[in-house]
Structures are given as structure tokens and as C-alpha cells.
Amino acid sequence: MRGTGTPRSLEEIAAAVRGRLVGDGRVEVSGVASIESAGAGDLIFVDDEKNLGAALKSRAGAVIAGKFAESIPASKPVLIVDHAKLAFARAAALLRREPIAPDGSVHQTAVVHSSALLGAGVRVGERAVVGEGAQIRENTRVGAGCVVGADVSIGRDGEIYPNVTIYPGTALGDRVIVHAGAVLGSDGFGYVRDRETGRYEKFPQVGRLIIEDDVEIGANATIDRGALDETRIRRGTKIDNLVHIGHNCQIGEDVVIAAQTGLSGSIVIENGAVLGGQVGIGEHARIGEGVMLGGQGGVLPNKILRGKGVAFWGTPAQPLRQYLKQLATLARLAKKD
Image (cartoon, rainbow, N blue to C red; front, top):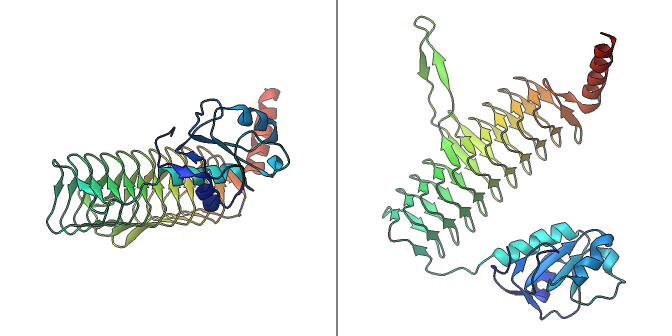
């Protein structure tokens, strides 16, 4: 994001990221960039002292740096913080944030039901559809081609990118970001087999999908609503592209789920868990608080993984040390043949 945001003074940014400003606080920046590509209106960061010299010689307007920069003479304004990368991310979010436009805007090709309620500053893009009884709160943007179903609620300051489909009754909290092509609240994959005929009949899918505040959902992700109750994604969880979450799943706070992961129905992921790419988890499994599950790991149905900070790997998933021991044993046995 180079020079495309709302210009902010360094004094304002320093207050927002709780940093100590060295230099002229009246300087304004409007974007963020790397050290190599920065221009005069950009903010950059450096979290390693060996890169500080290059940062200070760059064309950037200002630098966010760790405590190591406190005693080094600076040729441009520097914001001193404890965690440079985190402060940089927060500064970037501040620069992206736009003031609320009181009247918002609805594109002339959009279709908004007369009973839908749009808060101040809501923007609805080209060919988007907002259904009966839907509620969209202040300063949320709905991109081109989106479908917001009947009785959907979306909180304030959200970003719904183009071609997202949100099924009826789904609820999104504040500051939720949903990337292009995601489908939220679709029917779960639930069927009952008639043992006499061998045919499958659809089990009711009448529950809801609840997505709490500060969740981000990647492009082309799909999240099913509950069958009879609810699927819930709790505050602060981040979901990558091409992830599938089945019906009745309960995802805790601050969970991270990487691309191409698939979750069957009725799975519980506790707070702070991390799932690597292409993980597969069977129904009714439980992943404990703070568990880290490595890429392509597989968890069998009804299995429980526990151990905050413990890394699991393989299929069926097991603690990393145990998994590596088994690989080493297999390698030794292969050499004997």
C-alpha cells in the first residue's frame, strides 16, 4: 500500500502504536512499503539492527524500529517501539482506515431490499444484492457482485470483497474481513442413509453461522452453518484461502488456519491453536488450546490433541518428537534392506 491511504502525522501514528517519536512529528505519511521500494510518503519498519542503516538511507518518510535504534543518530523521523513488526502492522491499518462518509453510497446497479438497514458510511458495490431484513452497520463496504441474504447482520467497519455469498441468517461481528469468493452459511454435508434402499436423504440444515469480531476469512473459503444449532468462529481467528469448515464446528479465539485445510463436522478448535496448510480433521475431533498442527497433518474422528505449545505432525497426528523418531527408525530399517 504505497501512498494510497489517508495521510496521518507521525504524532498521530506514535500515539496509536504507543511508540516514542524521535524527530519531527508533523511529518505526514500515507502508505507503507519495504525498505527497497519506499517513497517519501511511506512508512517502513526494521526489526533487526543490521538493517537499520539501510532503512535510514532509504527514501522513506519515516521508520519504525526497535529499542536498538534509541542511541543511533537518525537522518529522518524514527518511531521507537518494543515490537517493530506489530507496530508497523497497526500503523498500516491506521493508514488504510477512512473517515466515515455519513451518507455512504449504493451503486445504481445494486439491489437493496426496502426493509434492509444500512448504517452511516455503508457502501454497496456494483450488482451486489442485499436481502430482506438484512442489517449492515456503520462504515462497512460490500463489494461488487456480493449476495447478502435475508436477515444477515454485518457489524461495523467490515470489508466484504467482491463475489462473496452470505446465506440467510448469518451474523458477522465488527471489523470482519471476508475476501473474494468466500461462501458463508451454506448447508452442511449432512445426509442419512436409508438402509433398505441404499439412498441418501438430506438431514436438516437449519442452524446458523456466527462469526465474531475481528475475524478474517480468505478467498474462496467456505464455512457451513450448523445443522440444528450453530457453527461459530470466535473473535480474532484468521482463516486462509481455500479453507473448508463443516457444520457445527466451534472455532476458538485467535486460531490460525492455513490454506487448503478441511474440517469435518462438529469439530472443536480451542483458543490459540495453529493449523498448518492442508490439514485434515475428522468429525467430532478436538484440538486443544495452543496446539500446533503441522502441514498435511491428519487427525482421526473423535481424536483429542492436547498440549499448549506442542507441535503435532503426520497422519495420524502425533507429537513432533515422536513423529521424527519414527521417521528416523524407518530410515534405518530401509538402509538394512
